[in-house]
Amino acid sequence: MQLGEHCAFAGQTGIAGSTIVGRRVLMGGQAAIANGLRLGDGVVVGGNSGVMEDLAPGSFAIGFPAVPHKAWARDVLHVRRLGELVARVRALEQALADARAAQGGGGQAP
Image (cartoon, rainbow, N blue to C red; front, top):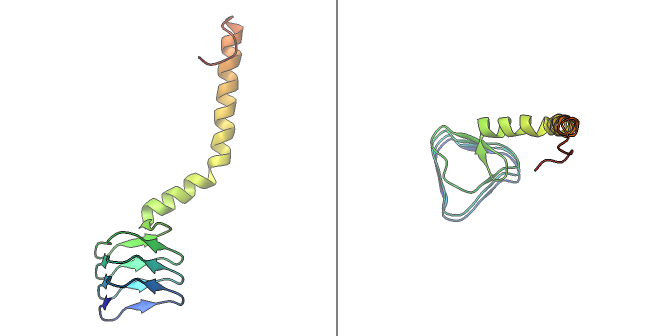
C-alpha cells in the first residue's frame, strides 16, 4: 500500500495490499478499499462503504459498492418513495382495468 500525506481514517477501515491512496484522503468508519485501486487526492469515502474501483481526485463516494455521493443520495430518496410509487402503480392498473371492463374489453392488460 502507498499512503499519501495528511490522510485520516476512522476506526475499522481496511485498505488492501497494493492500493495507492492520495493525499488528504478521508475514510469513514468500517470503510474498505479493494486491492489494487487508486484513490486520488482529496477523496472522501463515507462510512460503511466498499470501494471497488478507482476514485478520481476530489470525489466523494459512499455505499456498497461505493458510488458518487449524489447518485447514492438520489437512490436513497427513490427507495424512500417506493411504497408510494407501488400504491400509485396499483391504482393506475386498477383504473386501466376498470376502463377496459367498461368498454367491454375485459379487465386484464394484454
